[in-house]
Length: 401
Image 1 (spheres, rainbow, N blue to C red):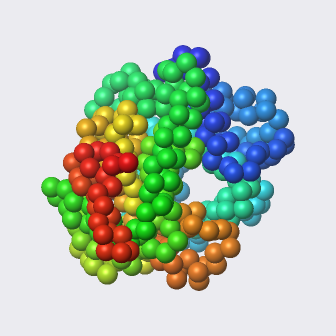
Image 2 (image 1 turned 90 degrees about the horizontal axis):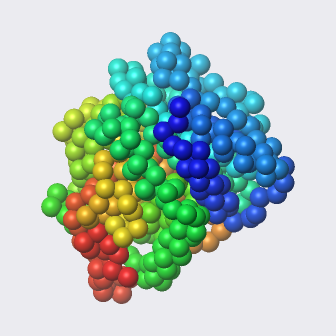
Image 3 (image 1 turned 135 degrees about the vertical axis):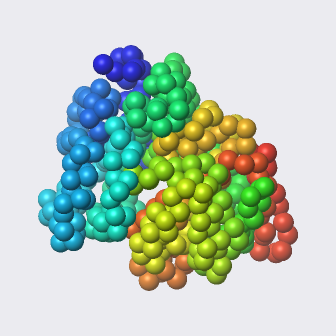
């Protein structure tokens, strides 16, 4: 039985299709190939999305994600060669993929807790070529993706909410109780576009973020632009960029806890010098954080800097799900950084023409890891412009636009 009514499921599915089509610069064509993946618990929404996509004339591949038991068995019993295995059918599928819908609905957040993080990293590294294929197709306008979360007892329990409360937070955040969710999302899209235009017109050199626990500076880098509310994440209110990792310095703290790889992590503190995290600590799960940040060279460098305006986001509770937590609104909005891989579509040019060498020269970080770490404290964000002048761009949880 679904936690949502059939009408809510229809609206949630319509919202995902809005995201899928909005995030792709080139229109979809009939018989384009779309992959839909979801956890078993999200079957009601997955089936609704599938029905609507087939009705639109797409070729839809549908499959369920591995259960916690299957995922654990693979990581626990496989050897390095098995973890490095990538089926040729996966590459063939991704080579011809035009769209991807991912519905997250975990029945366990801790089933990998005692699995060696090295094994998890090996599996992540093996999948990296698939993401490269996807990224190249997206850069050419041939592919788009959207992801969301469906409420489960596990998520609600870890967030210390009832299932009904958790489902209500998702419905509120995604606007699926609105008469026309797509219309509401288009209104947010328009407002955020104006803020991005304002930011992108500023000749920013560095961005300094100050709060009670941190003083953190990133260098924007050459030919960067800010992105946000493009339809990829439902919900998404963040405005983000991928800075030049080499100019990162100072202390960043994540005051919002997180679950990752079966582990619960609390109060991450990272101290950066010359672009790399030189000191890594956490109140809980510090050893796990250090191991993940040692996955590869780029895992201890940042790939994303982001701010969420509280005026747009209705999320005001910890959700034990990074998709929602990185879009936390609440009283002061949020800032988050991601250690690991960068988004090269933040390049203010044609990203499809960027070679691997060009990306490295521009300071785009490369890693098999991408981990968002969120701070919801009251903060002041100041941009130093290339002419030396300073401008407050964010304060009290909102952009100073």
